[in-house]
Image (tube, rainbow, N blue to C red; front, side, top):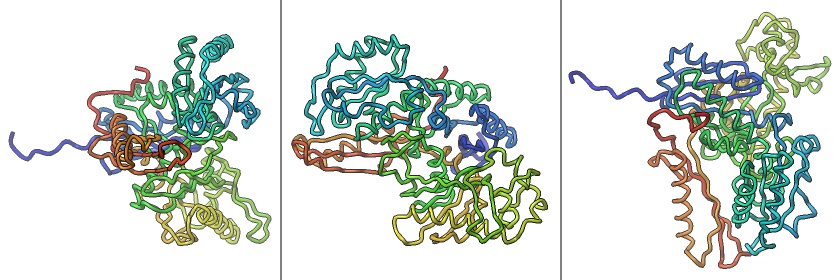
Length: 539
């Protein structure tokens, strides 16, 4: 072969983020942004995704054959819970009698969600104490009777919880086997695979997951078919709420893992675009702003239970604070001092391009104020030329004060920190935000969430209790690290890129044998995939 040999071009991957107002799609080659496109988010999120990806491929002349993978971050499942729609009746089987009767399942749920899921609660014997001792033996006859009753009621989704199952999950696995032997059609979620210590919160997380499973199945199948219609014969991955990816099959089983993946993708995209690994990220959208903290390039995890749609849960979630400030936020004034100028929290949302002044509408929005102040070149500037300069100045100051206050709340010290501004509404933020050592608005900041999805790595986590009677601490730590790294590889990570990003070691002095609880997280780059695959969904 004559002439120079050139390496093949890096494969392209597409990242998609579904927001409340816009759906963004980005194509990336290695660490370069090849192109991006936006589309209006649709009630059926699949339509918006298809439109955004079609625009991306067409506007940048990209061949579907060149796409090696598609990563999607979606609010689909969070919205379903918030709206109380598209959920299915769900039964709860709790193993704990004679304990826990005083706090039955659903006790802290909003009435509207309890009505949708139904009153299908079964308190059964079983469970463990905090030190691993039995509360009572598991009763198979009791479980078989529950399975028969659940099936006769026409309920297909079941959440199984055993007291202190993170210490010993054997009863949950045994209950699943008994229930499905009696009623094979039952779709079961185990709390030990989803939540952490804390019975009610872990149980709630399992219930949420169970009631979303049929929707997850339909959604993943729909997304897979959409990719096929677009000519994309490549793997499909879905963003998790810890900044990593899961396969399509995993998303069908654990839809709850997608909660808050949007802010997480924004923060990962912000870290990638800015090079900042430790700082604060402000993601300004059309309706709200999400403020979070980066620690070593990943979102800081919430250390307390998190409520989603009024349901208290304890599965992993990023520590994010939402503020009712976005590009579509309505601006009001009573022609008084600045304290009487308000911005948000109500918003025109996805109708921004119809109702904002700069787009020919008749509503004064934050975007109009930014255009009048010269902070944004958007729409028809002459339509805001007659705005009162004092009103514009006061509204701008109001927005900066709102953001600065939340940034200060999210910081762990009084020292200034780098603040990275991303999101389509990032033009609302001025440089020199109070509390910031520097205000960074990187290139492609408006599609940081989609970029975060495109660059996301594969992650894995283990959470185990080790007995020091059987091994030394160093041996336990080495085993936990090795097992977690292998799980990441099994999930699709390139073994040469896997690294341990987080280790929690908790001495359990109340357990015999001087036991310790070790939680390890590992991440790695997505391994190259040979041949077409959609993660098994709908194929």
